[in-house]
Structure formats: structure tokens, C-alpha cells
Image (cartoon, rainbow, N blue to C red; front, side, top):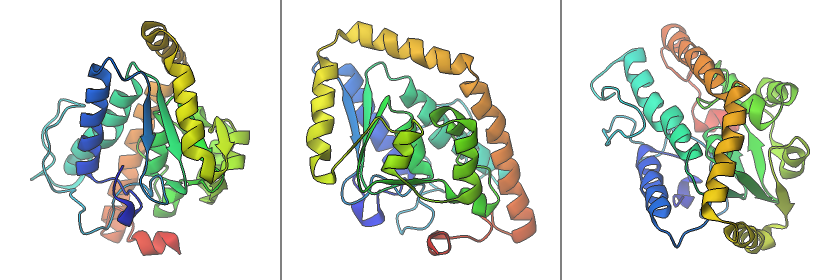
Length: 258
């Protein structure tokens, strides 16, 4: 991810650029493991909700779901169409990539940034990394790809959501969300070394092992759980729009930072 001036906030252009890169990596037999990283000081500050390059009203080539375009639609019709594609749909598409994926996290991994890390098979964090999902402050029950109880555990998921607190990399590792925490200066070397060790395994064996674990998660309710909470997510957006006149309850980046 290469928007360091905006802490790699995820606009639609980035979403589709990532999808293009992942597709090339899957089709390239020389690529054994995919590492997802963020340029600059931060992995990702989440969804783009206020940069000059925010492109929520722009059309892209829909790939994750078959639904009509969000552009020209209004209210829930527009939000449901867009978020089904660029958030839940894309995260599910990436989770099913048959090659191992490692998230290399430094600095902020907030809200929508969690979704990007959670679709990866491993999370390696620098000791400067921190994690948070503060969107309950907007009256919204969590980001669209609601993997919280599976990436953590139910009580930890509630704490993350109910408090909106930032968690250190060490705390995230204690709760099972992070595989390894290493000094920031050693993050890239350690992550690439891990990827090298994984790459020595047979490609088909890795793909089948990944599918086996993903299927076990789905049998534990991950997929229908995300579907059920996605509806609550949009109910919250609609409530905000009706009561506050804004789907984010009037909270912009500065307000959330405060």
C-alpha cells in the first residue's frame, strides 16, 4: 500500500490496485508467498473518510460481487452496493487466495486496516504497531468485515469495540491476533525470512492446508457471522443519516483522533 502521506488510508483506487497485484501474484508461479505491507510509518489508518483523493462516488470494475453500481444511487442502496463490493466482497476474495499471505504491520492498523490484516494468514508486527477499531464512537458495531470474534475471541472483541482503545502489538499477540512481534528495525528481515521458510513447502499442500483452516473457521460461523453483522452495520449507517444527517454521525478523521 503506497499512500504514506495519508497513512495508507484505503480508497477504492487502492482496493483495486491491491486486487490487481494479488491476481498477478497468484498467476505467477515464481511467487510462493504474498507479503502485504504499507509504505511509510503506518500499515493502514483504515478507510479513507476525508483525503482529497477519496473516491467513494467513483465507479470501478466490480469483481467481488454481482450487484449494480453504487454511483447514482442514494442512501442504503448506494452504501450497500459499494460496501458489499469494496469491503466485504474484496476481503472474502482475498481471504481465499490460494497462496499464503503475510501482513507486515508497523504503526497504525486501525478499523479498515484490521480487515486488510485479518484476511492474511499470518500477522507479523513491529513493536511500534498498534491496533484499534474505534467506529463504535460513530454508533456503528464494527468494521464491515466483522471477523473480530474469530481474529480475537468474543470477550476480547467486545473490549476492542466497547472501549475503542488502541492495543499494542504485545497485547494483540497475547490475544492471538498477531503471530510475532519484532523490533521495528528488524520487521522486514524477519517477515521475509518467514516467507522464505513457508515458500519451501509444496504449493498445493499450502493451498489445501489454507483452505482446510478457512473451512474450519467458516464452520465455526465466520461467514454467516459477517453477513449478519453487515446488516447491523448498515442499520447503524441509516440511523446516523436519519438522526444526524450524516452516515458517520458527523465524525471525521480529526474528531476520531481526538
